[in-house]
Amino acid sequence: MRKGGIIFILLSLLLTNYVFCQDVNQMPTMEEIAEGKSLAKNAEYFSLGLENKYNENYDVAAEYFEKALEAFPEDHASMYELSVLYMSKGLQEKGFEMIKKAVELDSTNKWYKIRLADFHKFNNEYESFIAIYDKLLEDDPNNLEYLEAYIDALLHVEKYEQVTEKLDVYEDNIGVNEYLSLQKIEIYNLLGKKEKVISEMEKLAKAYPYEMRYQSMLAEIYVQNNREKDAFQIYLNIKKLNPEDPYINISLMEYYQKQGDLDKAFEEFILSIKNKNLDYNTKAQIYEYWFAEKDGDEETTVKEAKAAGEAFIETHPDKELGYYVIGTVYFNDENYDKAQEYYLESIAKDSTNFITWYQLVFTDVELNDAEVLHKHTSDALRYYPEQPIFYYFNGLSLIEMKRYEEAIKVLDKGRFMSADKKLTASFDICIADIYHELGDKEKTYTYYDRVLRNDPENVYVLNNYAYFLSLDNERLDEALKMSAITVEKEPKNVTYLDTYAWVLYKMGRYKDAKKWMEKVFLYDKNPQGINYEHYGDILYRLGNTKDAVQNWKKAKKLGGTSEFIDQKINDEKIYE
Image (cartoon, rainbow, N blue to C red; front, side, top):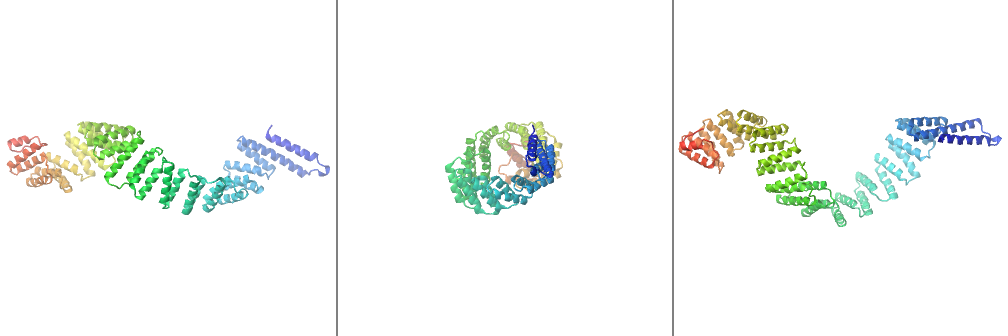
């Protein structure tokens, strides 16, 4: 049998008794009988409304509650239920009106008042919400649920003084705890009440003397308020009670840094790395912080980096950072074999670390091993196929191995990916030099022209371009202008001086050529064979055959000359 049916039967019996069990003189009026029937209908509809609500038939439930109200217009219980259902259907105004009427009819029902307060909150009417909770708290001042909702509303309207008062009441009921203390501390910070902040944190730390996190937080507040000595005593106490606290070494490190005691700060820095309770990522951040802040001499920095690297390897032998650090120490010490060894170990731990691959490649360059450089750059490109720098060095390794066609393909691909003008120029220069080696003058000059369009004063390209043109006796006026820029920018660069002299020579300006070539010998105490050969050629053209032959002989002895050097010496005449 349905609940509504039971209620209806009970009410019917009640009415029957009411009608037939009374004294004749006390018989009800017709109006009273009608009212009784309305109440019975109201009870039946209300019961059916609840039944459908519990079965999640909300639309049907709302219809029954509405009928219950028709039967008895002052049914505040149905109003309460309808306020919820209307709200769920998006009919906020109807829901609001229902709950307001319910509260008017029964102002003592706390659930009605809470529901009305919730409607005010939904509409951001926090003052009305607070007014209702003021009355609720008058009746039940220690109700923690009321307090929590009340405090939240006070925060929304920024009534911070009242919030702290209510938080104190809350605290009186449940005792000192983190949530309440931190809420108050946040508010005191907003209000600029530093002493209140300190006293509140002291209270929390005192309530939980063995909770190291609270002690650390108190120490931090002391530091913020220039009470470093008080903070230091707390740090020492934490270290004594819990030497493996994950953050104590960091706190002490920062304290000693501020005091200027860098030796002790460094001790704590190393201890933080060795602390097994501190997570690895934080240690890596501390490492970066320590060396970013370093202003000391290079020798001390290297020594500390080595100690840090060793601490990482000792504590985290499965992580890459320690090996990278030690590798960099050896790299800076120009011990490239050991640097390579540690970089490879770092990559074995984490093959996706870009900076380690980058350093490894530069180490290979210093070791001048083209095959190893090619292997490592090829491996790096598996992880970083869009990094142009690895294509560049891969191309250089192929050039060293004289695999020119492969080098051009690799360098062209890297050039396409480069967004950096200087790096793009480096690609073009390498490709131009390859085409020169292959005897393709047209493509050599095409790539040099590309560089000069973006960087018209690139001295390397200007020098090479001018020299190659002079060797081919082509565009000599243009070659001289190019070479003039290089000697203007670097007037003591003997390579550029030699080229300038040689272009003048090719133009038949032998006296000018001799003057500029003599500057080579002025600035270079160890001239190359090609310098002496060029000087000999210039002297020969000026009619000084004897000195020309002497310079050719010096050139032959040093090496690096043209293929005609022996003929020049033997026949005492120039060949080109």
